[in-house]
Image (tube, rainbow, N blue to C red; front, side, top):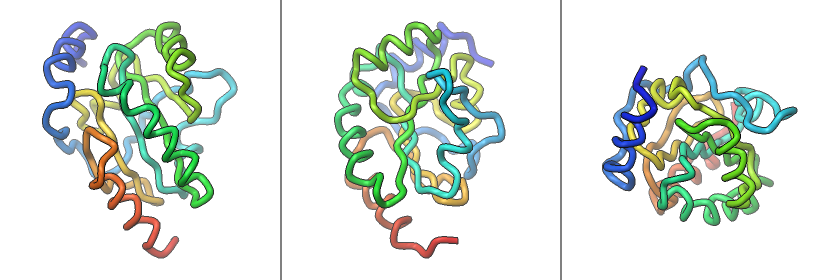
Amino acid sequence: MRSALAILLLGALACGGAPTAPATDRLPANEPSPLVDGAGSFAQTVAGRVAIVDLWAAWCAPCRAAIPQLRALARELGPRRVVVVGVNVGEARPEAADAVEKLGMTYPIFSDPDFAFSDAVGARSVPTLLVIDRDGRIAHRGQAVDAALRRAVDALLEAPSP
């Protein structure tokens, strides 16, 4: 397990850099915990849906810049059973919860303070955006809400449901 300082330094250097290395093609069994008390589990939130998972940190400017785009995608694609989910990495719960409020994040947010989830999915920088299919497989990895992410989501929506 990396130390928090090491990941913050790595993230600061890599923020906006190359896509993450694939550690797995499926979501790991260890999942981030809900940041807001009373929220469902990560697995329940994404189960049977196409999901856009945003691994982010409050100090990361590109992460903050993506939030309005992610809110718009959540509104637009929610009726098509697409869920947008944020996973705050490497930050203490109070700081992450404060950032969620200040940044106006309206979609489900989970916490990964010890990097267990981000390590398991091969995220080496923030932001990391994953598109997950209905079976929990990672269909796309990137670092921006861009045309490639949208193509991946659209392709999964066009695929037959299980």
